[in-house]
Image (cartoon, rainbow, N blue to C red):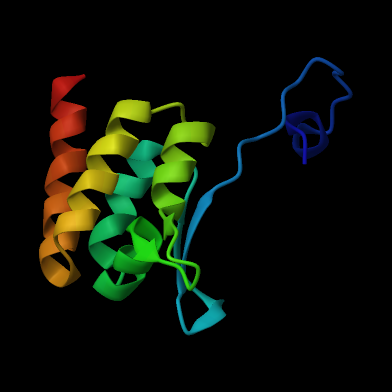
Length: 115
């Protein structure tokens, strides 16, 4: 949906709104734990997302042995935060569970302090 459609205007130069990142239940994809449209929103909702959903969306090995990082892809291609995506993917490949959640929250908070 275009911003112009939301605002009720008809400006052809308006860019589409970026898709949000959605934390879903890995075993029940229709169950949504949270949604973020920006890095700030991601930082705000992360403490309320179950660790297993964070783990699933941050780093997983697929059945064909490929690695998936939905969160990394969103950060890289939607928000253009390549370095942060790399840091998160590296972090998620080495720790898991509640430790991953805590470190990810610390990393995102530190990112805002560096700005």
